[in-house]
Structures are given as C-alpha cells and as structure tokens.
Length: 476
Image (cartoon, rainbow, N blue to C red):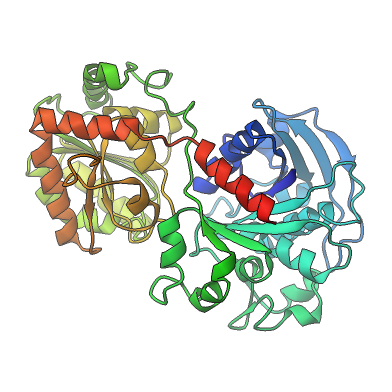
C-alpha cells in the first residue's frame, strides 16, 4: 500500500508541537508494517540544510489560481523514510516558525503557502502527476493540508483516497472569500457543503467535509469534538460524518524518549534501577538554582504557556502548592502576559521555583527525568505527549480528564492500574486537590513506586497506533 503523508512540519527538523512529532515518528512505524509511506513537507531552510543534495524529481505546472510552480525534491530521512521536499523559496525560505514571522504574527500569505502544499499533495494523488510513484491514499494532517481533500474532491483526475487527521480543532485555517479564486478552487466549493465556514474559507472544514475518512488523535477527543461545548463550531459537521471518524491514540518515539539510553540525562535509569532517577533530580536542582532538597517533591511543567493548557489555573494556586511544601520547575513559552506572570513567581520564590521561558529539547528531557510529578491541567488536550513521556520516565502525571489525557492516565484510586492523578472540573480548586493528593502519595515510598512502575510498564510506542492506521487505510 502506498501512502503520501502531507504535513507542514516534521521532527526533528521543524517542530512546533505534536504534529511534528507524529510526522517524524509514525511513517517509520507504518513502514515497519509494510506500508510504502513518503512524506511531503515544505523545504524549509532547516530541511534544505539537512539535505543539501536533495535532487529535483518533479515540477508541477498549472496548479490554478495564483499558485506558483514549485519544485519537488527527494531526500531520505535517517530512519529510511523517503521525503518529498516542496521547494518554493519565496514561500518557505523565511525566518520564524512555519506559520509566524519573527515578530510573532501570522504570515499574510499563509493561505497561498499551505494552499500550495495541499495542491501539490492532491497533484501527486492525481493522474496529472509525473512521478513514477503514485499513492493509494493522501494522508493530510491538520488545517495546513486540509485543502488537499477538497482539491481531490473538486478537481478532475483524482486517483487517491484521502484521510484527514485532526490534531487540534482549535486551529482552523480561516481566510477571506477572495482566497477561493487565489487557490484555484471552483465557485461550487463556496457553500455550506463545501469549504465555506461562516463567511470564511476554512482549510480545516475542507478536510472534515471532503476527506474519505477522518481520524483524530485519541478516542476521547473524537467523542468530545462532536459535542457543541467542545466542537468549536464544527460539532454538527463532525456528528454528520461520525461514521467516517476514528479516534486513534498517538504514540511517542520510544527511542528518543527512553530513560535507559537518553543521552540528555545526568544519569540513565530504568524501572529496575529507579533509585538512579534521584541523581537527575539533584543535578537539575543545581542547574536551575533550586535548593538541593531530597525531602520535597519536585513538580514540573513543559508546555506552551496558554489558557488551553490550563496553566493559568496552576499559576493561581502555585503559592499554595509551594507551601505544601514542594518545588516547581516550568519550561515553555506562550502569551506575553503569562510568561511575565510565571517569571514574577520565580523571582518571588527564588530557590523553590524555576521558570525558563523558551524551549530547550535537552532541558525538557532532563526535567522529565528529574521531576517527581508532571502537571498537565489542560482545558482540552487532543492527545498530549508529555504525559506519556512522564509515564515512561517514572514521573507521575497529574492531569485533567480530557482527550488523550483521560485515555492514558488512570487515577491512583485504582490500585491495580493507577499511574497518575486525574481531576475533572477545569478549576484551580480541583487542580489543587489533585496536587495535594499527589504530594501526599509521594511521601509514601511503597505506593509511589507502584504508581511509577505501572506508568513505566505502559506501551506508548507507535506500533499499536500504526496497526490501527493500516486497518483504516485498508478500509479506504
């Protein structure tokens, strides 16, 4: 079976969140099951630098609207996955992340940039393609490639089926009506049954409306987004297409995230050598300027600092958490106001709270290994990866019962399977109670070790998810 992944980011080269991790790891797991996967991704500077000898293999012409003629280059990832690099320097050779300029605002031509990515994905899946390799399925990811399903639906010559994977319903790719012409879509697409969404052209709706099948990144999230409360305006459409919607829980890269071999750690450890985890805690306390206290639980956050992640709730109760007593480490970036508030908290509680604004992959690994408790109070969380990293590292997660968090973390009240602490309402009071329960359990070494071992025994690899995707491909 031949599958084209179309994605706007791919780890380790270009990553802003979970999408990059999925695009970087899932293709290899699928290839291990015999699927011929190739990944189409924009030729950002990081990828051109990583693959300077990528050879041009195609130049799609006459793509419609105002879309330019790009080059498609071929490269081979270290894990053996073929990459198709979409090379058009005026669109992709830019500073900043894939979506924002250096000043933090959306690029004004994002509709053309990701319209081109979608259009080329559809071109590869059509009879117009000049490539020798032809996919059976075009697997689109998030709004940036949702339009590929619409192109396959509206334009002649489509050969491939389409699967649209929704990683986060909050990002919908909304642009004005004029974009319809600029993107080369027919007038018929501008309707409630097409790409129109309350007067805007929505790349996300295009994928949900026109893909032959839809998946999202956890079973719980698949149910939640069909409710008006959490459907973000798309609930009616998702209920209408419920028979075509699957929830497949993400995995993690278990080679990169393995405490027994992780090169970023001060000291490696495993479920059989859990006592070595303490060395990571002691060293991180020194690195981040915390008091060296073995008698206090160390709580950690590695996240975008946003209200979606519920970190305003944690900020509200942080002084009470520190009085448990406990220590707190935060790594992340987000809204300026929240960054400032977290920095102010760290200054006020110097030696007990450390906040690093930004992102550092190696530090993220060291935090996961050093922390006793990992905090994820998300208001919504399609899947979440950090709770799975935490489980694998023997760091007990405290999470809200939503999306993939609910599917991966079992409350400690279940003595046979408990691996964390789960709370319900998105309130600071509920969060504080869960953190108090976790801190109390930490002081019971036998109980804590059992929670750690339950978490470390969980299989978080991509193998199971890949099997579910193969089943879905076969139905198409």
